[in-house]
Amino acid sequence: MKAISTSSGGFGPGGVQRSGTPQVGGGKRAAEALWERTGRCMDELHKVVTAVWHLQTVLSKKRVPFTQVLFLHEVWQEGDPLLIDQIWEALVKAFASQMKSAFTASSFVKVAFTHGYPKLFSMIENLLE
Image (tube, rainbow, N blue to C red; front, side, top):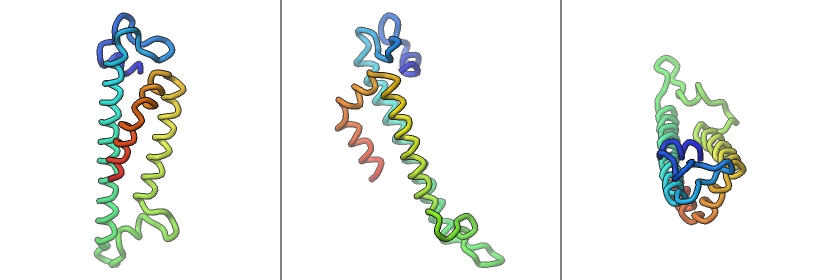
């Protein structure tokens, strides 16, 4: 909320209160900024996952010229999760951690995501598509 407050020039007199909620008159703009940043975050996550998926695809098709071993076998050991699985696991853990800390740090964020759950769900669903 502090970052949203400073990037948008504050939300009324005083910007964000100590509890992490915007002061009177700034709630709607703060919520819009929060949703905009969440959308940008989902776009960035999509770019990262797509890049790793493409990398894994290329590594699974190209071979080392001298040994004819797939490049994927050079970076991946049998029994380990594939690159995309490792990235998804790391992203889900990081996302859960960030959401948990945002909810505990700011009641406004918790309320905004709780009331806007259908919007958040659709953002996540679009990311998974």
